[in-house]
Image 1 (cartoon, rainbow, N blue to C red):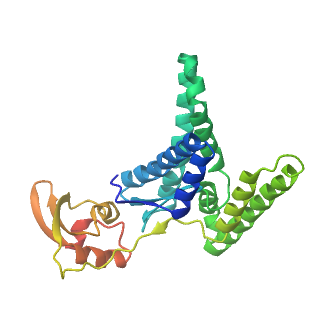
Image 2: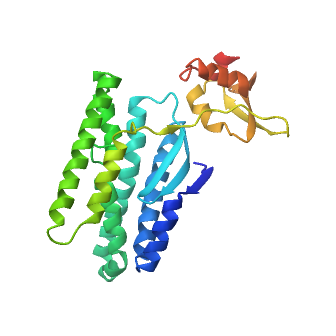
Image 3: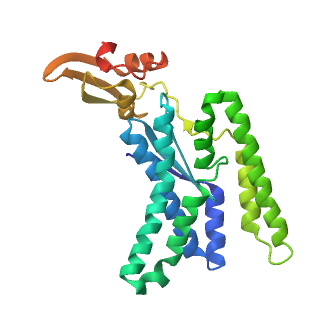
Length: 272
């Protein structure tokens, strides 16, 4: 995985400042690190499958990741989606094992464990924009794209309404503003489609010059697997071999043209 861009949303900085003012900075930093672990797990899983998720934006409620999943299958996307929650779940288990071996570490690691476990459980809720909402859509995909989206949106709104009711109930005692914020997030996410943001392959600007990047690959490599080598700031040329026999060179523009035709599952040697 190569992280190409890490951005901070302005509200993320504001929440960080407020956390410092109200002596909650350690919790804020713990949540941020757990969110980064979650998104990096998505990126690693995508990279292993030959796809690219390499742009992370830190938000006030966590983080979001973007990249190019063009041509990904439902099964592959399911593995990518599960990677994030599983990483947080394994981290929580790791802390539990640490307490069993060294009980004296509990006071210093309990917050990190709770945050990791919370991210594991919450992200499996079948509601947008959480991973569970995207997973639900995959399982509903046999019903058709439009039907699956409608059902997922209804489920997301129901979850948002239920959590908002919990906030109303909490107002009779100590108001739980976290529940209010979470319900607003789910309600807004229910209209967002619940998809990873695809990053279109932009045309290169050669007016100021651009560095060429030459990648040697087997001609049997699938096009979707070769996509991870594309860079916005480089011009890529694939040098193809069949075992030790040189097959030829595949320039980036020809490769991208074949991708535009939907030929993600074809071998690169067929592009020559």
